[in-house]
Amino acid sequence: MPTYVFEAPGGVVYEALMSWDECQKHLADNPGHKQLVTSPAIISGVSSKPCDGFRDLLKTMKKKHSRGITRSTINTF
Image (cartoon, rainbow, N blue to C red; front, side):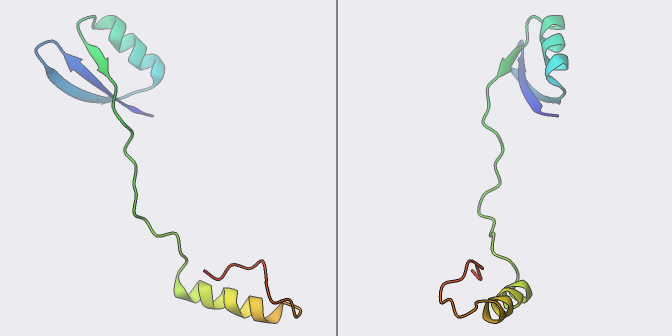
């Protein structure tokens, strides 16, 4: 379920975890509150390379199954 950010009268900002239908009901029940538009939380800077043991396994597979082709489709990173 997504997290919605609301602003109550008086400038109080709060978050609530609820479904879309619950969000619409919450806004209908609280006419003084308004929903704030925020950016999603994105995790960045995560490495997508596999560990060294798996990379060694890929290199071994590439050597044994290349059939003399110099360019293989197995990515060893």
